Image (cartoon, rainbow, N blue to C red; front, side, top):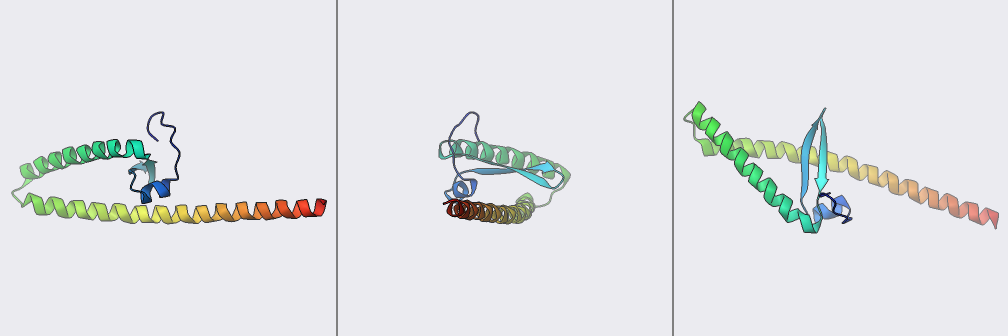
Length: 123
């Protein structure tokens, strides 16, 4: 899913293999996922890490300007809470994806059985 990369893979297998999978909010409670192949995963992970560092620096500057609270504790607690919520949503999305994959597999199995039965009747 990087430019014109023609690499093919199953997204869940790629995630299990440690490839980079990015998630962003699409609005309306929906999320868009983008998975990358082995070749492009590290490049995208580096870009994401850089974005997070920049965002953290901006947030830290804003917090310093607003109060004299211990920035590190506040920022790390907020980051942990946001990460936890992100993982909860991701878990729900993967569960829905798993159920959908099971339905597709069942449908394909039934189609194969029906085709086999039709061939046996024709013979």
